[in-house]
Image (cartoon, rainbow, N blue to C red; front, side, top):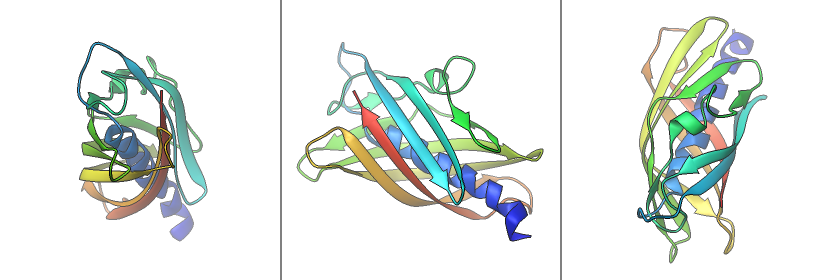
Length: 161
């Protein structure tokens, strides 16, 4: 049974990655930014490039899910399908080297089973003085049947530009 459930771990990873993406957004200004990301759990992963943000880091920003999810974005996953259900708001604390997302809500479908995960207040750590961030988080199940793991441990990397 663990092999059947392991694809659902990807859902957790996706939630984590998208959460990290949301964490790296800053205050709104006139400049639009971009975010690339990779997320994973176990042997599954998802990635995207060129997601649009409402501003550039370290300003507070919002990640536009329509520019990550297909067909508008290029979210690509191995062995599953996934989508971001919200537009995460991200704030940065440069003194602490962190980015924090208000909430991350992701749906993952594996072998016809859809699991929805939602986490609030997720934090990612910056890599040196770059705008690249990494996080590992346990993300709880919001909706889904008994085949959906109650919590997913995900890892994610995000690069804002």
